[in-house]
Image (cartoon, rainbow, N blue to C red; front, side, top):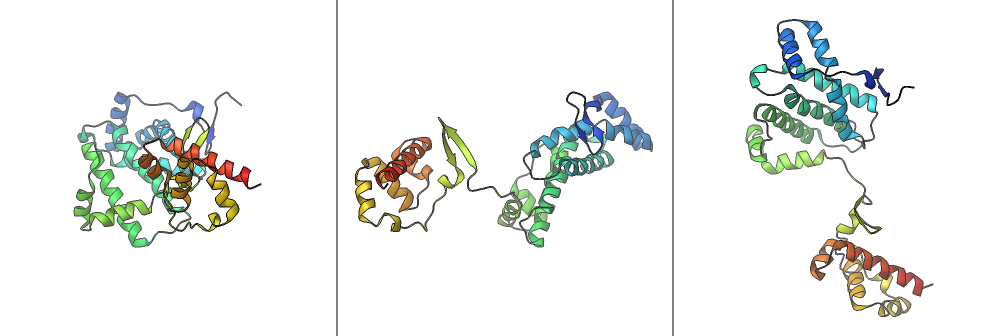
Length: 257
C-alpha cells in the first residue's frame, strides 16, 4: 500500500487534484453554458474540499464512505446552483452546502427521535441560514429566521437544539494536573439526599475532614450543587474543587474500611 494512501468509496485520496481559482471560474462558465464534461471536472476538482470538511465529523459514529458520498451530494448541489454573479469564491458558497448535507444525514440517522414538525422547522431554519450565508457571508440572527418562518424565536431555538447530538454525562471537558472534570460535575443533582451520610460511622469519618472539604461534600451531595457553583462561592477554580472533592472521598473510603 502506498504511503498515506486512503481509499474512500473506491477513490484514492492520495491522487486527488485541486483546481485553481481561475480554473474554477473557467469550468463554471463552461458548465453553465451546457458543457457537462466541465461539471465532472468541477466535481473531481473539489473532492479534497469535501474530505477537508469531513474531518469535522471524524468523531461521529458514521461510516466515512457514507459521509463522503453525502458530502459529494452537497458539492454537486453547490456546483449546480452556484451563481458567478455572487462575487464570492466557490468554496465560500459550497462549504455550508456540504456541511448542511452531512449534518442532515447525521440527524436523519440519529437514534433519538425528534418530532416531524420540529424537524421541519429546523430544516427550514437551516435552509434559510445556508441561503443567507451564501448571499451575505455571515449567518442571520434568530429573529430574522423566526420572521421568515412566521414562528417564535423560542420555536426556532427549540427546533435547532433538538437536533444537536447528545453527549455522555461522563464526557471529559477539562483536565488539570491529572484531575479530569466531567460534564456531570457541572450539573446540579436535586435528587441526591443525605441518606448515605446518615450513619454514625460516616459522620465520624466526615468530622475528620477539614471544614472546606466538609463544605464541598455537603454542597455536592446534600444540596446538589455543581462543582462550578461551588467554585464560584469559594472563589477558587473548578479544578481545585474537583481535586478537594476527590481527596475527601478518598479519605472517607479509607476511614470506612
